Picture (cartoon, rainbow, N blue to C red):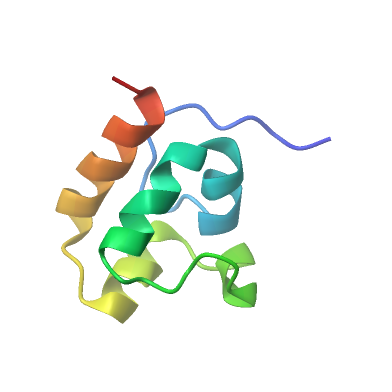
Length: 72
């Protein structure tokens, strides 16, 4: 049984779990040209690591992810 994630999404949130729980976050990765979707490392990487690898400001991306996860 998969755990249910509840916002807020934090720097330690695992990408694969987050994208599975909050499909609305996926377009944010596409928009920023982050190749995390479907990447085998997404099972291990957290938001902090992905931002570091792609040169994305962490807090800015967290704000976007949480807004997408909580909906309009």
